[in-house]
Image 1 (cartoon, rainbow, N blue to C red):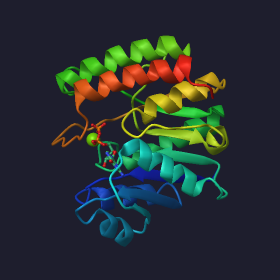
Image 2: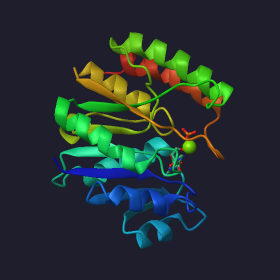
Image 3: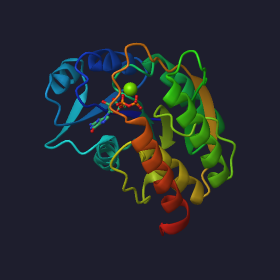
Image 4: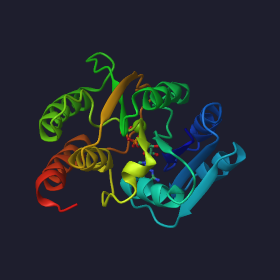
Length: 223
Ligand SMILES: Nc1nc2c(ncn2[C@@H]2O[C@H](COP(=O)(O)OP(=O)(O)O)[C@@H](O)[C@H]2O)c(=O)[nH]1
Ligand SMILES: [Mg+2]
């Protein structure tokens, strides 16, 4: 197993070095995808030892992840680890996901947050619960947390998969399309930290968008 970590990061200078340092204890290569941050994200990531893929204009989390995937696809990695750059995911928990990928041979290992009404902002809580129920039905597998950005995927499973998401719908797109190709799933509990959240996600707008796109990815798009 040879995993590369890909982290989309937009103005995450405060946290990116901790993410990179934490990941280097677990994987040998970390790729940060920065598309137009106006802070020191790229410099901090490089100083911490990451490779940084810079893109001129800001086009969203999905575009950044797709660019990162294209960038590593020809290298000899077997798995890609995806996580956020704002320390909402704990880098040390990446080993749980990688262990599960190795143990189960799954194509996609999903991080699963414990949805707790106390710890998660209300809009987030409901959007995640409803979204996960509907998507589980779509993909024909009981997935508790379909939106979590902390995951491990077999690189071969992504190789010819056409992805087009620009924003936060990328998690849904990967799940739906991999399942359409018969991917085997596994899941692992992870911690999601919501302290001092500065999310760029707009709950109503982005969740509605993701729902419509899920229908498109599942039923309308030819893949
Ligand atoms: N490169 C890049 N990363 C992004 C963009 N939007 C969000 N991200 C990153 O994606 C991760 C999750 O974003 P965040 O706004 O915290 O979403 P949330 O935690 O799901 O509410 C963070 O590492 C962000 O920096 C973007 O437009 N470009
Ligand atoms: Mg966040």
